[in-house]
Image 1 (cartoon, one colour):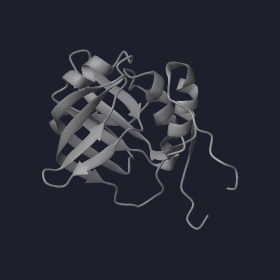
Image 2 (cartoon, one colour; image 1 turned 135 degrees about the horizontal axis):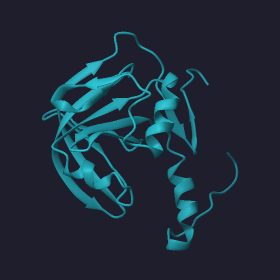
Image 3 (cartoon, helix red, strand yellow; image 1 turned 120 degrees about the horizontal axis):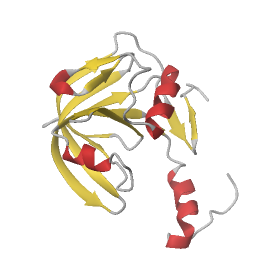
Length: 170
């Protein structure tokens, strides 16, 4: 890359530019699930990160504007599913429709959170802490149980507004 970078101040009128800059960092794709009094609830999230091995902590970050935000920050437990590259349909579905599990193979998992079949990894967590963070909340979960797929395959990735997968050596 030879062009000089474009600098800007992240003001309210430059949110689209800031979103594009954030999008330069490719992430994995997850679906977070919990059980509510109204039934199972899911949400696609790419804001997942491991935080600590001792104690085992993970973080994810739902948008305050989401209709599902309050249910997740009030949940006692949840499950983070790391999606395989073949699970794009699940990611797209739970990005917009959190209460409809009818078209997916799922069952109650550890701690009562819905378990989606075929994921690369599942982290069953109790809520450790929730912190306000601008237009999102930071949800820290203490991992109580982990399930990892027996077969290793590529994960679903999100980069610059596009879904895809990693290709080694490129």
